[in-house]
Each structure stands twice: as structure tokens, then as C-alpha cells.
Image 1 (spheres, rainbow, N blue to C red):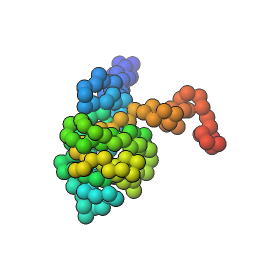
Image 2 (cartoon, helix red, strand yellow):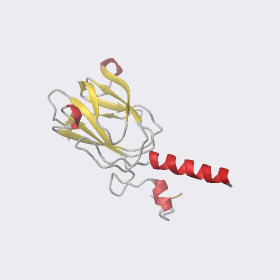
Image 3 (cartoon, helix red, strand yellow):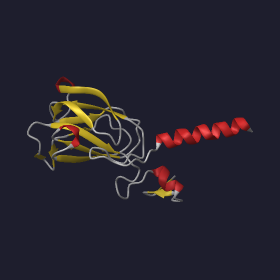
Image 4 (cartoon, rainbow, N blue to C red):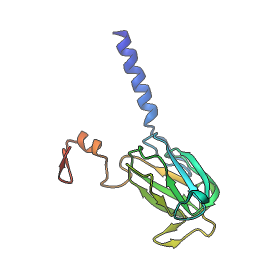
Length: 163
């Protein structure tokens, strides 16, 4: 009985650390997920390994990441993150200044390159993106809760397909 209690307690501690809800500073967002993902930043768009300025950087949702060398394209390189995120790229370090916003849908993102310094086809940053922050809360995109969340809410059908 004591072993079961210890296991439940350990699970609850791990769960509370995996899903933090924190107060925010100017350069942080509330993070309800702790699933990091890997992003590479490029000197040009579309993303080309020959023009990589920063390969394989771990991005922690809710925390600002400064890009070492300003870039025009960014690519998420691990495909198993299965979370929706809003990526906000900034023209200066520490996630301040002008920003562009891009939506990353969960699932296979290996081929997805974001024109991080452009929005609606317009170059917004003269020198490229210098920092990025990701908000990957399950409800970050209105109306786009994950299939798991929909099942938990009692919905058993999505777009005509049974779950």
C-alpha cells in the first residue's frame, strides 16, 4: 500500500513539473507544456542546410531563445512533437521589438520552413529574426484543441472520422 502511495505521489510531482502554469515576465509566455522541440535557423528562406546559421537548437515553450546569427528562415526538425504552437519571431534579442507570428501544427514538421522575418509576404525585419518564443498551450489556437482533449471532453468524432 505504501509503495502504491509513493508511486502516485511521484507521478503527481512529475505531472506538476511537466505542465507548469507560471506568471510571466516581458519575454515569457504562460507554458502549459514542457515538450521541447528542435529548431534550426537559416540565413535564407527557404531553409537550406548550406545557409544554416544555427542547427539543432532546443526550444523550450514559454521561454525566449536568442538566435545567434540573424536569420530569414526557421525550421522545426523533429517530427514527433505532436503539439500546436504559435511561434513569434522578433527583430531584436530578448523577444522585443517588431514580431512576426507563425502557426506550427503538430505532427510531421520536418519539411516545414517558416519565413521568420516575413509576414504576409512582406519582409518586416531588415536584418532577419534575432529571437523566438513559442507558445504551445493546448488551446493556443482557438478552436484547435488536440484530438485527445476532444475525447476527454466527450467528443468522439472529428471531421467525420470516429476516434
